[in-house]
Amino acid sequence: MIENGTKIIDNRLKDMIKTHEGLRLKPYKCPAGKLTIGFGRNLDANGISEEEADFLLQNDIRIAKQVAYDFVEGWHWPQLNEARQAVVIDMAFNLGPTKLNEFKGFRKALQEERWQGAAIHMRSSLWYVQVKKRAKKLTKMMETGEWN
Image (cartoon, rainbow, N blue to C red):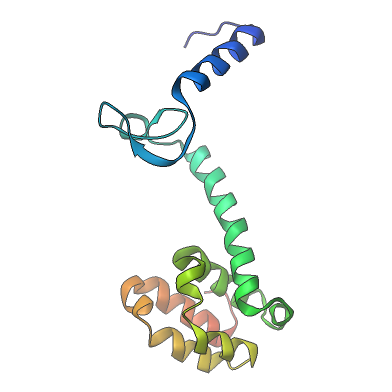
């Protein structure tokens, strides 16, 4: 790898490439037909590193935590132990806020601390059928309040 060693050139080069490429925060096809994101990052050719994936995951988990908290309507959150909080966060991560908010019976069961009822609502959803093993594990965590 070529190392120039001067921050001035690195910064100027970065600014120049940013100007030329432009910023796109959602994936798009570049003129060559390659899936691209950010400042011209060719995902088809380069993908992302594990470090970049972990950085993205941490940001997505932060968002999912807020979605889960809002879903349970905040003041009910402390009545869920850590394992049950993790279930709701995992579902928020997987489903996103719009789909999670369709789980009205599930939310009511959580708010009333009816863990078996919450699990029943989980099992009766399309989500349960779609994500199979993940849903079985999360449902058991909801019922027992224990990490599996």
